[in-house]
Image (tube, rainbow, N blue to C red; front, side, top):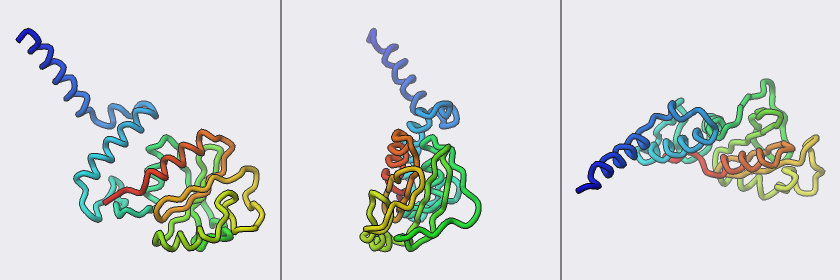
Length: 177
């Protein structure tokens, strides 16, 4: 019985920590990542098929540009979409959405289905992110090729840590229904 007040205090502290809002803990990149994981897990538990992410982005199990942008922002990247017509890339049957992430460049290819992406990837050298046998078309940096569900991305950076962060953010998977 002597430990009862301590147990009540410990339980209260644990409950308070679990109910903290995401806006209270959004002060640092590490707390944002932790909070976003917890929020995503709780949202997934109550989401229904076709449900939407906060900004109206569909949770279909497939990538959409809005879910890519959201995931990158949650991962601590400053995402800026490049205006203008994106370049057509050899080996890719869809046009990319182009972003700058700091001093780095990201080209995101969203396919209608995973099988459509698989057909293109079968013809691509993923080391150079170009058709097999073709020279590296990417200026300045060697590309990091990322594939996840119906998404292919080519990240051009000289920062290995950022390349790893981006790869982990996108390969964690598309928002699930």
